[in-house]
Amino acid sequence: MLVRVIMATVLLLVFCLAARRARLVPGRFQNGVEMVLDFVRNSIAIEVLGQENGRKYFKLLATIFCTVLVMNIAAVIPFLNIAGTSVIGLPIVLALWTYVMYLGAGVKAHGVGGFLKNSLLPSGVPKPLYLLLAPIEFLQVFILRPATLAIRLMANMVAGHLMLAICFAATSFFLFDAAGGMKLFGAGTFVAGAAFFFFEVFVAALQAYVFAILTAVYLNLSVEAEH
Image (cartoon, rainbow, N blue to C red; front, side, top):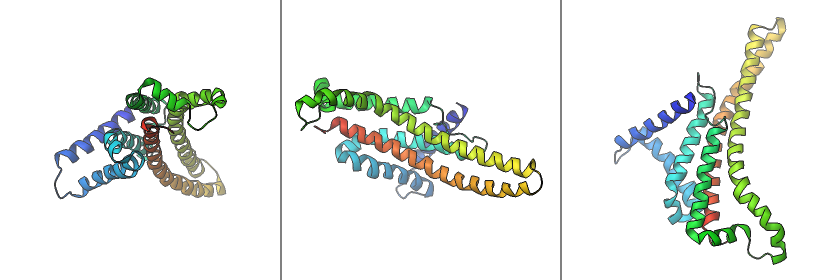
């Protein structure tokens, strides 16, 4: 929880400072923040949802992307060393937020009946197959989508945390506790740990992108006429 509070505070400070010091010709700091927002707007929101809905849901997607990214990056920051998303609570909160927005957008666009029809009864399918497809679609729409959002994020960050911990714990053992030639193995585990460090940075950004783009995809499925 302390890591989450620290990283949330850092995120708020970054955007508050960027907003207060905004200039027509941006400096490096403002330009970096704008690059992140432009990426979310153009490569996620508008790319998936189109111009109108992309602008409508941009704030949601930008908040989710930046929150997940910053919480994930905590895994490789010294003295923090754990992602805020590697414990299930925060992924569940983000997944539930996506889920509520997804249901709300669908009901607002089509009404309760229309949303359920679009979600549970795919068009172009022989009617007898609805007896089989409707329960499967119900399971996917109302249970699997939010559950997999939370579990995927947490599982990836836990796996990265464990790999880093194992590599550097092994390095410490081989260098300080092992005897004789066994100490040489410490060099190998240190190199592996360094490699996993940079890989974890990549995974942190990738999982933020995956969470945000799946949110956009689910919103698009919810508001489009039929799918």
